[in-house]
Length: 203
Image 1 (cartoon, rainbow, N blue to C red):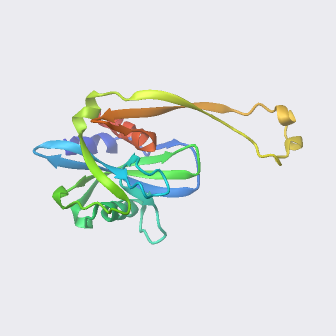
Image 2 (image 1 turned 180 degrees about the vertical axis):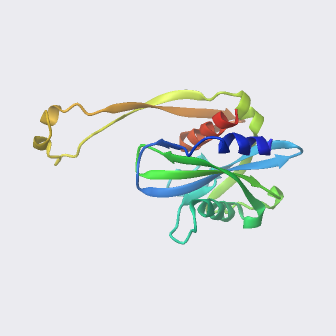
Image 3 (image 1 turned 90 degrees about the vertical axis):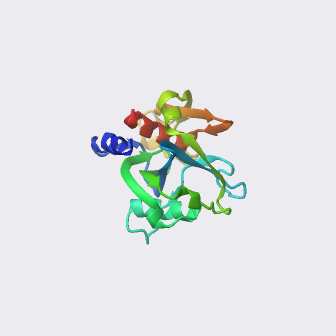
């Protein structure tokens, strides 16, 4: 199954999806093999964090200047958050770059965690980890709901410099939000978007 996953992802050309430039982050979709079955590992963010406390996510974070590559950043963050060593992590394939409609770009990687019994979550960042069978996502379509994004110029925007001034017809867009529900856990947002991309390729 692991070889099939790698083959499916590597067969497509470089993938860029979404839109936005600035902050660069890297995340990993961690796969764990238990008793011959593959599971996806998720984290529950610590309640003490300022950003998105209590939400479900993949291991990852901001790419530092000292990181040799985006992949190295994903491995480093995974090790820091799960209390692992680099030797416990095997990168399977790069998934591509998710560019949300705001100032970030997220480099995504699929990896396998060896010796998952050694996982010791960093309590400063992670309240708990849990596992969902890969088969669950292969068989279960997510619920899909939509959000609308619209441009809102600042008060000092120079409307006199553009056609139609304040009556200019700014473009808006409608984006899907994916929701997976498993054993009382709600996986949504960017985590679900990355997961959906991964599952679509594996299928």
